[in-house]
Length: 183
Image (cartoon, rainbow, N blue to C red; front, side, top):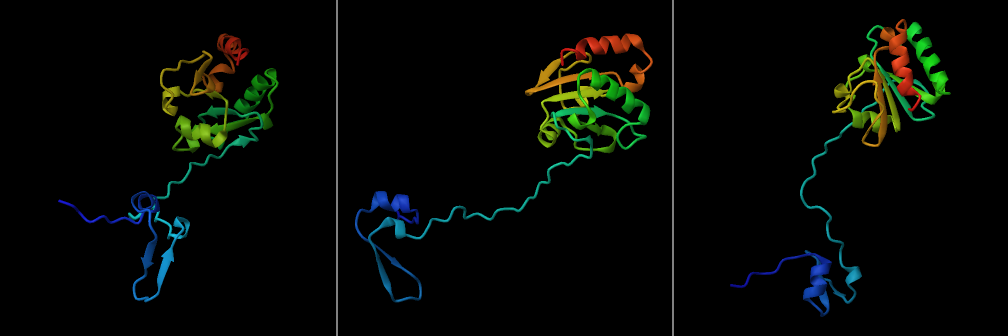
């Protein structure tokens, strides 16, 4: 049983037909002779209705300029970014690594949602992440441990205690510094 061929694809027509093609437009008596396939009407790209789902990209409020693509993540529900004491302590740590506030981005996890690793990586274009007092699983970074230099999806990662826990504990500072030197 032979079925009627129905297609508007110029590629299919060029393969199946090697003679002149006539295109008839409804309600118009004029007949056009088409000798060049390039003059055929363009095939519609998509005939099914497309649902208009707009996905917004997450945006994060942060301190610093992120000039060296280093993301610092803290969790301080009482401050917009970080309390003054912890900020001073953090800047001392970073200055030992020859980093300044304009080199990094400080994001306070307590002030954001949708902070999965991929969202953070895409937004900050970071190649290194330091976390203080945050378990990496919260960010969707499975299998990472604290106080160990690791890599996750092409990003160097180092997580440790909160700044408040380290500020007065020399053993924690020393443990952290020994790993941070390699970061």
